[in-house]
Image (cartoon, rainbow, N blue to C red; front, side):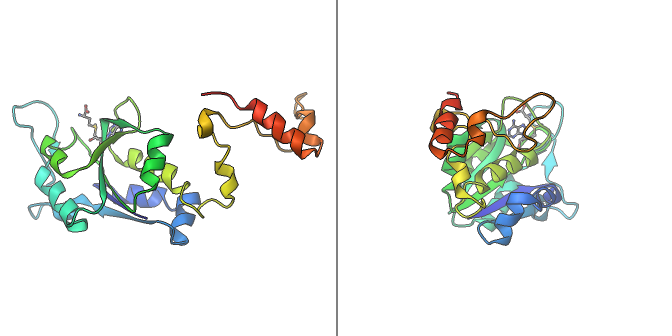
Length: 212
Ligand SMILES: C[S@@+](CC[C@H](N)C(=O)[O-])C[C@H]1O[C@@H](n2cnc3c(N)ncnc32)[C@H](O)[C@@H]1O
């Protein structure tokens, strides 16, 4: 799978993905993530990517010609699934994460300021929101999507089994987990987990998963 991120802050993406599971996934060649500087497609030598809104009003709007040039350059036959991060997009949930993890090529277009000129919608496939609140830019949402979907790519997690009982699988929460110390400030570990009786442990864990 390849993921191209179009952003004014590629270093935010690169830095955040240089740790833990996303870093391992890239090193293992299971996902190829590239962060591109949108300014490289600016229309002037000052690297201008935004302008004042027609009709007036506060803030700056990101230019459609710059974003379109970037999309065409990295995906000129439109093979990728092109996502624009936007607070009014389809709300990200585990179902959508699964759907996106099946795509071979993804593009994540990150806005800043007042967002993109509305005409960009002609060149994207989907708008995605990570929640009903407004952030300053699309980089954190892009990272949330990348993190959530890379862990679903077969081979990325050390133990694929850990996905099977995770929260949201079968519309249930994960079961509670415990580790050493066995006693902590008067709190103990459920007896059954110390019993070594695998069938009983499985039964107990199943009983602990809550509907969500
Ligand atoms: C300050 S916001 C623009 C907000 C826009 N004026 C509005 O009211 O919808 C700048 C950029 O941050 C990103 N963004 C902000 N909140 C987001 C969210 N909840 N989910 C996804 N992207 C978000 C989008 O890429 C957006 O273009």
